[in-house]
Image 1 (spheres, rainbow, N blue to C red):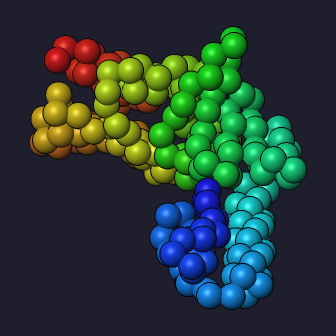
Image 2 (image 1 turned 180 degrees about the vertical axis):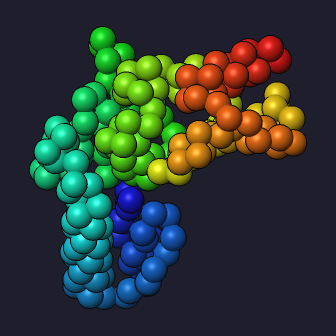
Length: 192
């Protein structure tokens, strides 16, 4: 997402680098500058295309309150903010900025799960994930399930399936509400 483009003069040659990787060497200054400018345009155009693709994926949430800032390429939904440049998601609440894992896929999945009323309210969901992160535990979210990964669990993970309302503990699968899942996860990871 975030490309660093550099034109470096070293040992009588010009080197064009993108994110620390040398792309091409030039002896002629004008050719080097032209290639540098073309690379900037190419990356800007690819970022614009990516932004437009992401917008099309979340367009269905606009009527629910999704706000889009095209200038800064960011999206916000009730304090949940996504930034294209860094592919990071944060939750802004009461002057606190909570970093979350998962980038755009997390953002889009959270919106879909909220719309389908699968995770309750946004604030309690984010506070749960904040506790998971504070406990140095990873998670993965998609529109079907939330997977929490920790050595505290039997078989290293606990996965809640939003479609079936079941918790996969590794050795067994049980009926659970999402609130019961959150309690189970927090009790398990806090015991270690």
